[in-house]
Image (cartoon, rainbow over all chains, first blue to last red; front, side, top):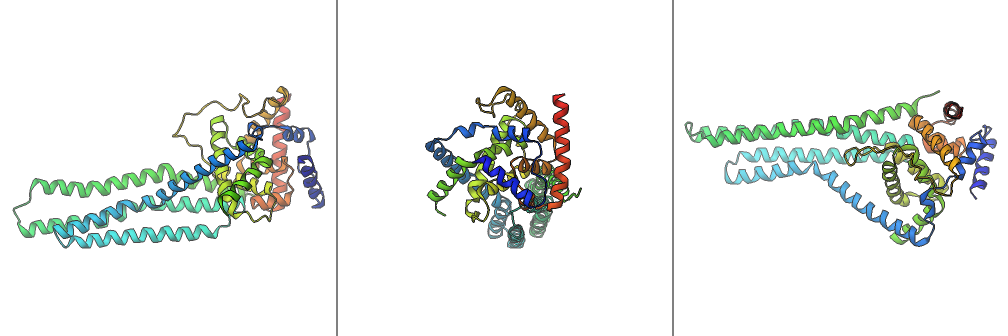
Length: 223
Length: 166
């Protein structure tokens, strides 16, 4: 059966006016004779078991993917809720920070959806298109993680300013040690997020971008 | 497509073409653990791709396409386990294969892994008898470029093999 298919392919090659697919019959013979452990799983129940295992793995992978798609939004959603709460219990001016956070969250969702639409334009029927899609995906994530902290800085620093203006307005001499902790926290969070974002971008996404660029350059190379 | 139909097609593909998955995995991963990992990744991708299979191409062409797409974008997970020895213990070759053939096959895979990833893909397709037109369709490289690249890759491979056997 396999031999028949090989001959069929070779005939196609000859019909196309090209040389046979591989000129070394000894090597092709060796290649075609190879057997693999998987090929011993010929019993139907073994194949069914394999399919069941792959089905379960696929489901857990989809769940993991769903989490990856939303995890970038989680911190900003928590910040929005936090500033709404502070706006209610402390200073209504903090609703500005909540609105800024919500705006950033909206922008992140919009850019993710836009990226998804871009990725859908790639037809993954060829290796080239798959690499182009993966490159686009890696570039998007690299950009997202590089800029994450910058976006977070805006609402957090605005919130810090509002809190301090409020404290000074209410009681110019009443600044307490606790306020310093709040200030330190508001500065530490964006710095921590910046560090986290840069680390992910540098260690994970930048090498991915370079890897796919190299692959694409290789596929586009003409001999 | 419902799950039972998907399962039926998947088991049918595995019964007839599973060797493609192993060949691609062995050509892109250098250790047994990585080969296992890549096989698993390809199978999951194959399972997910069943809905997109319209029957316009042969199942073997489709499986090759999916397997190569996954193998080319796959990256060894360095965080999960330490690097183990290359697959020289031949556990990916069935016991029925003659010892001499096992040795030559292993050397062949080793030489294939020395090629660039794109040339490696073309070499696998070539060894499995695909035509230039089919290779061009799977990879997205023009037919004339497939021919030129393949010719150079074959020369490199044959030279390495002759050097090895000398």
